[in-house]
Amino acid sequence: MTDTTTRLLIIGPPGAGKGTQAAQIAERFGVPAISTGDIFRANIKGGTPLGQQVQAIIESGELVPDSLTNEIVADRLNQADAAAGFLLDGYPRNVEQVHALDGMLDGESLDAVVLLEADVDAVVARLLKRAELEGRADDTEEVIRHRQDIYAEQTAPLVKLFSERGILVTVDGLGTVEEVAARIATGLDAQLSAKAGR
Image 1 (cartoon, rainbow, N blue to C red):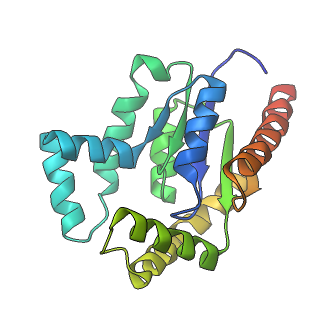
Image 2: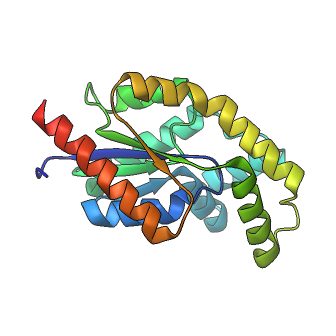
């Protein structure tokens, strides 16, 4: 491992455990985990103008528009703690956002993209259990499956794009947190070593 910047992204279906793994990967590489969902939630909780704007969009059942999301990510990547690298979670969600991110990175590219793969039925069961434990009454099976469909539709082109760029690390996302973390570490080490050797 070199001491240069490490720019990573984690993608996977809702409920695949991205947040948990993102925190561990970020800690391992000493970079911030940047989750657009967390940024949105923090702003909503803080009642900021951005939070109010995002809350209104979410309550109407829409996705936050690319322009707003791109702006937030660009601002976050310019903060001092991201200078040595970062791990993105929840962004980019579509090909347009990938191109926006390419622009933010000034000709640099991501070093690796971790794709957590998980069986849809297994993920739906996991999310239904979480909804029950956390009292999320609006997380019905229908809603959860709809989110999975949106993810598949939007993210499939990203998987193809990152695969063509030679930076995709595909990992089985089912198993214990430790098992998945070990698979990610092995895959990332191989990818980053290969990239360093290029």
